[in-house]
Image (cartoon, rainbow, N blue to C red; front, side):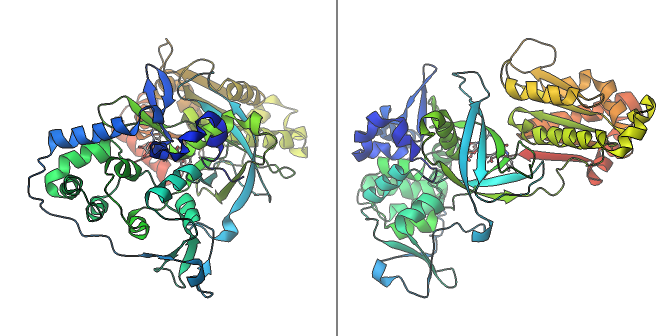
Length: 515
Ligand SMILES: Cc1cc2nc3c(=O)[nH]c(=O)nc-3n(C[C@H](O)[C@H](O)[C@H](O)COP(=O)(O)OP(=O)(O)OC[C@H]3O[C@@H](n4cnc5c(N)ncnc54)[C@H](O)[C@@H]3O)c2cc1C
């Protein structure tokens, strides 16, 4: 089975009768209710509709005249029957952003929870086995295609009164590409990103009910700017939510597709190191959820991590099933550890940003092991001081949230680092009592060791990895402070030093931002 929301059917077997209900359109949505997560459909379409209309009624005068209307999207897709599928058109079942040759079919073989049980933000380690071996380096990422839930797509097709014998033709491609309509909706289009104003205007053209039509026109116009932001940007109301709340809206599927963005692959850094005789690649992710419907305590799960979280929690149960995923290799340009054991480096991360560093450390450990069994080491180790100049230390600074989280990784990396000369692991916990809450505080606490390591070799490096701009900014400020206090006695020179490191690719960041 290709992964996507399909697994959900098995996770919640009692709920299958809800399939027929249109409320199930938002089955990925979750609601936080008194600290426990309950499924979205318990908050039925009635409350969704009430929410949307209460925002509209309280912020928008439906009698106002629309101003500055957007331009309607151009027509790009065509619905065609099977008979019409032209022999010359390329019928396919793939994604547009990578070529078929780059796609890897892989099996998810194991999952292990790295966070505490019942954590509201589960962190998972999972292992994937591609059908053909991939030669990757520590620091590389892989793109995963996670399909939309099949029931979600069924509900959407039902709502739009389309049966799945139809094909979608992309008239922009030469030759035209055709996809089965169900396949297109599952694999190609992002059903959750906030609809653009031009999309709302288009939907208004297909409303029979005058109030619904007016509301959509105004939302797409300058008059409805604040309401648009509240509902769609901050409230993350999706196309599916609109179709629930505007029942008279009956747009043709091909025009809906004209407005939908492509479903982007999600990237995950390999948390392992390539093994010549094995295929397994490790990853680590944390479940993303974000607030929806401004002013309500409702949350929605991230598209990929929501699916991965369900799959990982059910992996034991699925062990006899063939859980497959489509992925591709995305090599990193500069985010790689030096292969020279004489070069010291710092690794700085928070949360799942530890992923590549697990691979870095494993690589270093193997290189060191090879060196130990080599002729060079036999000469060098006769004198301890010589050995010290040959093997440089590496430090990992790791910011976790709570004690116990990432424990398996911590134990393993601590053991690996302790087998490398002078190498160390430094950890802090943001949700525990302690002076150093964040990784930037931890760096400052060990300022002398940080600067000593950096100035012990002309090619020393710093690697920073994690999600979010704040961590990267905080780390950069701390490093400048450290260089200022320990070496330069002047912030400007410390800043210039960091810039030089960055220009020389000796200070490399792999930071994940989101919109
Ligand atoms: C090169 C690269 C490597 C990456 N490696 C990893 C990795 O090893 N492990 C890992 O867990 N992630 C990693 N990511 C991030 C990952 O690709 C996804 O962005 C993330 O898992 C969320 O995907 P989603 O589909 O679940 O959420 P989406 O459905 O894409 O997210 C929905 C919304 O949630 C918000 N959001 C997205 N991500 C976050 C976040 N992290 N925190 C808070 N809010 C967010 C945004 O508002 C977003 O629009 C990496 C990203 C890149 C570019």
